[in-house]
Amino acid sequence: MNLLKLVGWEVERVTKPYLILISLLVVTQFAWLGYFLWSETAFYEEMRRTGTPDYVLTFSNYIGGTPFILSIGFAVTAMLMYSFWIWYRDFQGRGTFMMRLLMIPQQRMFVFTAKLFTMMLMVLGLFSIQWIVLKIEYIAFTNWFNSQMMPISGSFERAISFDGALAIMFPASLFNFFVHQIVIVLVILFIFTFVLIERSLWQHTIWASVFAGLKLVGILAVPIIGYFFIEKRLIYDETLLFIGGVLVSMFFMTVWMIRHYLTKKLNV
Amino acid sequence: MIEVLGVKKRYRKKQVLEDVSFTAQKGEITCLIGLNGTGKSTILKGIMGLTPFDRGTVLVDGEPLDLNRVAFVPDHSTFPIHFTIEQCEAFMRDFYPKFDSKLFARLVDEFKLFLEDKLNELSKGTLAKVNLALGIAQDPDYLLLDEPFSGIDVFSKEQIVELFSSDLMENRGVLITTHEIDDIEYLVDKAVILNRGRIVREFDVEDVRFIHGKSIVDVMREEYGA
Image 1: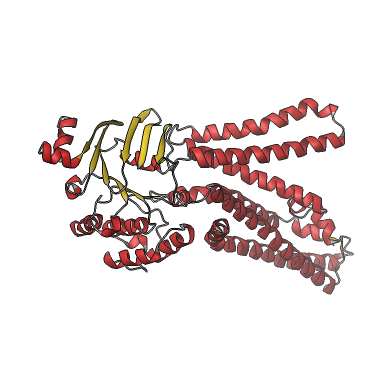
Image 2: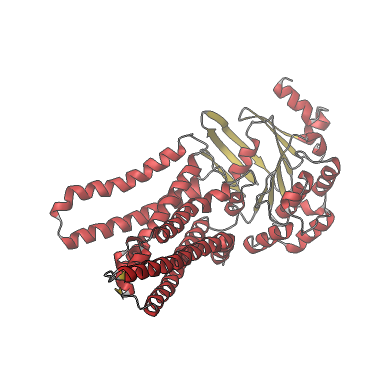
């Protein structure tokens, strides 16, 4: 099936940079862990020599460190950038590969679906690897400090739930996980929509990207403004329903726009 | 038959195509002629839906465009430049259901191409031959060729011209844009002259040649007042 082949093709194209990104993430975090263990042990020893140490380490101390936050931030930024690049790279140069993709005798939406699948595989891949790495880091963290007889407290789950980015990546419930994934898909869909509107209008106006941005801001603004008007009249369940409805409508609206621009308007 | 009916296209403030209509028959070579910037490539890309027309219709044998039946060969590669010819073929084999690997192998042999060569290492002439081979191997009913002779040497040109009169082009409709009209003058059945986005003349080349004793370039001179 062409869709699966296209997904395989897209995945193959991103494998090398993706592995580099993941390696950077893992190396940075483990390097930071090594430094953290060494410096905290040295600090604790120093305190023990000078008096009674009265502070307890938690895993949050490690994951709250700048290098750890930066490593996650860098990976997320790279993913966001790639959501643009996954399209724009096919428009690069005179020999645009997009031309070849659009001439494949198949539904053009397969091109979009393959790119969306690839992005989601990358996101879920990052989450899974980060989860495994975090578990290993936690084991190293507890084993090291236990072996040094240094006091530690707090569980792995507690540390994760207190960290903003990690709480989004690894929420406490499966329901929340799905909700977060839907929001991530929506972010990617918004980026895709932006690119496709811009690539459809670039031959008509130099303001193509501004126009594309305004269109998306408009779509986002309507429910947000609407929410402020009705916020006080809604009970909790109704608010949830409203947010759910908005997410679903945005999903269908962006997919509709992507279909419209990709099949009828895109200029290569 | 490819029917282009009343198409219009605007790039920013420039009207590139203004109510263009013509047909290209199966089994014939139709040549789109015009000076630079008259919209020839835009028409080919528009037919393929790569730069959709603002208005107008394209029909292939009375039906909307079917990409299994029409192949477009642009004057540049449509693959990443680090690709080898072999990788291009593999891609075509995977995604283009009608792609004929045996036909491609035959063309590779005739054009003396090397499958392991990378596209960015090829001369313009060789690249043109690769593009053409990939296009013909799709076994289309209609082949759209955009400037296949642009910037290529005389021997490569000869090879490509020979191909037009070979059995490989039998029963295929060819719509070609070129500035090198002299090279294919005797192969072209029909010519369509474009000027400033409008068709100024559409004629049977043989009629003009035998009845009026004129070549395509002579007709072009008349139209452009050159």
